[in-house]
Length: 185
Image (cartoon, rainbow, N blue to C red; front, side, top):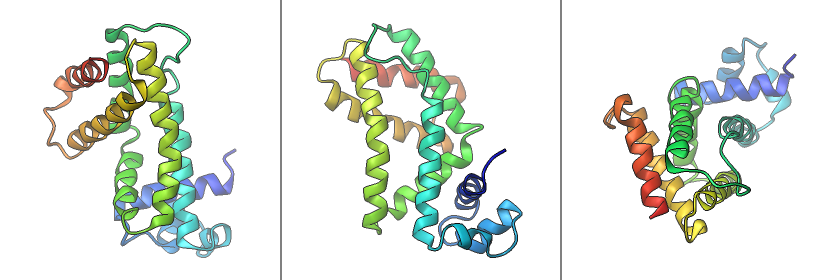
């Protein structure tokens, strides 16, 4: 059974994705979660606490998505890595679409809220470290710098795919491979 805080965090993610930050209220989250009015504010007194709960839940779910990425323990070839990265991106664009939309909403909100920016930086550092370790396993020089670049390029690719500016699903794997080639060059 999922605990109430997780249900609310999931509903907060869905609400942010659907309504944007303007529509992100305790009442809206109550409605999304099909809870009695006041339930969300009982568990998360402030809007900031609710945002942080959503962000923590997104980081938890994102970690599960990228869990199959290789660590620095073994070597990995470019094609295998491209397949893995494409799978993660596809997951973020399909079953994780709400989470991805919410992430971009919170990213923009963080430009106006230093506390949110700090929390996003904290959670994001886990993924930058994963990227560094993964491309180090693939033989990249300067994995710290290149890992940060890979994450930044990947953010752009996901945003373009999400907003349908990107070339489409058919070219997604080629784009992921291109990103990796740049990171490993």
